[in-house]
Amino acid sequence: MNTFQRARSEEQREIRRRAILDTAAAMLDEMPVGEVSLNELSRRVGLAKSNVLRYFESREAVLLELLDHAWKQWTADMPDRLTAGVDAEAMVDERGEQFAAVVTDTVAERRVLCDLLSAQAGVLEHNVSPEVAARYKRAAVANVDALAALARVHLPELGDRVHQLVASMIMVIGAVWTHARPSQAMLAAYETDPTLAVLKMDFATALQEMLATLTAGTLARRPS
Image 1 (cartoon, helix red, strand yellow):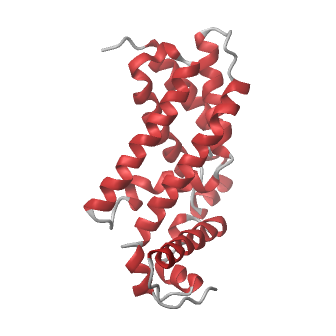
Image 2 (cartoon, rainbow, N blue to C red):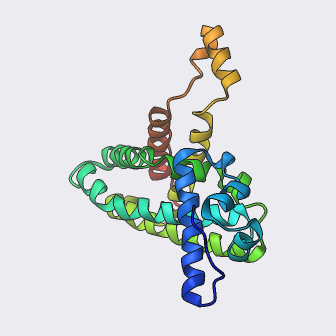
């Protein structure tokens, strides 16, 4: 645990802010988003809760910033994986399948990103000011634009529909992540009743199928 003296310069305040983010990121490596509390974050970073709130207005504000950072890292790692995984000479339907597979493979490697995306609309966008909400949404739009630019390289046939596809993919990732992590009660129900066990979802398998279907549908749909 760090012990900080009072920040008196902009450089010291940035060090403090970075320490809060780094500590929260370390907590996300240990636990799901729902278990990250402001009290525990304050304790680990070595600041009073009131002091943490000088830098971030809420727990959710911290986590939204970490989501933006994780999303940008994911996008930055994507170009090489797409180049290796999508055959530029293949027919469009095959490239669509390959694109969905690469997106699935890369995001499945990033548990924290998936967890944050699953909490984005229902949790993280609450308990923040309009200013923080707007700042995050502007960042999210930029992140969608960056992914759309990559998709357009490998699936130019998408045209203006590429942004719609990418935005839908982000929503699907969060939704599938949530459903692929059932409660203990639901897991027990699956074990007790084999007829329910077929509903148990593997994240990567389900996600790739849904993203491939979404991509194929977007490609097939005529521009409005």
